[in-house]
Image (tube, rainbow, N blue to C red; front, side, top):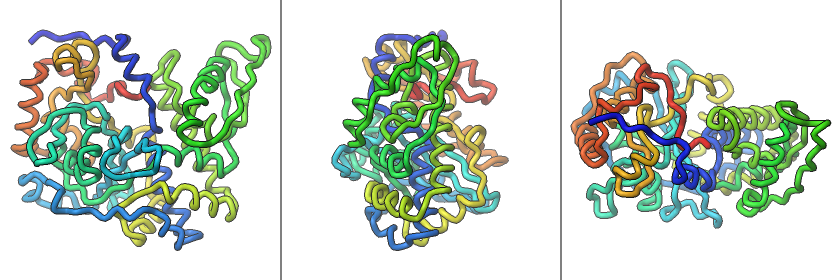
Length: 398
């Protein structure tokens, strides 16, 4: 079929981007693994405040070819599913959609942590409650059947064998920053306007109050000039959520990394009373299948393992199509179509398990063929911008 041009500035695309963004993938990792570190170092008993998320493995699926695969080629790699939920009432079970999904790939042999972010609007098989096939946006999996359904969706579409997860509520980020006394961030005039515009919604969700940032005169601050402001929890999250302006996709990712870096630095220098308050606020917003011992081990790993925020992250699907043409082809579903699922899974495994020549399972090939037939997008439609392996701009990062 002929190449279809994707309209990145379509009205439908902009409407979708106006939906509430929970928080950056990097920030989820900080709150899950970083909090575990502090819990081990100071208040081991505080880990009991986390919600017990024991899994029912009878409800978790793994593809047959993956079950039979040579485990030696994957020795030393631990996979953990992570999700950010916007629940309002801290109910972290089925019924809540996962606005942020990722997979933490912890390689204990290489002492590295790689992060795979799964775009929430990706068209995949999330499986119906009765176990049958159900192709829709992948963030519906958690709503259908909680963490077991989300893990099954990841395992069977991506040829993985994930056995643990952690979820965190939206309020955690604002609360963490607030408990640590806020962050000093350089803002442009345009960023001040955007932060003030986001504050009301962010505060409504997080419960953290805010004050509007006073806009300096243009003679004092204009264009690319910046001025340092002390931001509280709500203001900092609003800053990380900005998805407007030149280079919006990359700038937003850069803002998230900046907030992450500043928050981590602030936490490392926090007093024991601050850490105590942080854990009291954050841990009840976390639900995980990991045991205390496993959490402590991950916390220790964070001290010495390399978490490369620039090169150690992968957005999935790597090759994809989206926009108005896709919406039309998918009967009005504004989604992200992997092009193709099979080839994307090959690249995913190359990222998680470097040097391994992976052949996707029969199940993945079946799902891939279904998506090609349903969407009309096949191998000939792979975007040229990502054929060389370079990461394309995330359709959901603004």
